[in-house]
Length: 178
Image 1 (tube, rainbow, N blue to C red):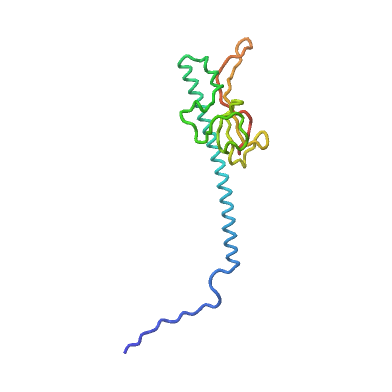
Image 2 (tube, rainbow, N blue to C red; image 1 turned 180 degrees about the vertical axis):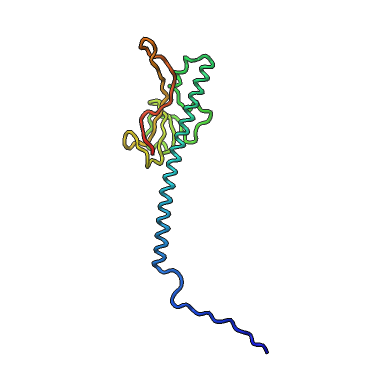
């Protein structure tokens, strides 16, 4: 008769197996630190993306202004160009940007959501309300908005008189963002 060999018995390791409380605390601490760093970076990049989107909208509006002026010039209606400065710049666009909420007459803070554009009928400014403004420095503390206006430009002509040269879309108050 053949004898079957039994599998050798495993030797039991002395003491408990698994994580110790100290190892668990170290792992949780490392994960928490990494999550904090990641969230801070994500907010930084989100704010940069907001700034780029705002600047892109301004660029589109400036291009639309030039197209409006070109259309008036080709129709021999140069006398109408200065009137562009009296219009809501969003009217020059074929499609309004996603964050545009409309025209308001001197709205109160909190009426309009952050990250939105609106046209202030009181002073003729297009306003962007900054949403993520950790790196935004306004001219006046506490005002996290950027105001733009279309303005008629003049240049000096002969005899010291000023001559109409065009319409520009510019920021009303200086700001610093990053």
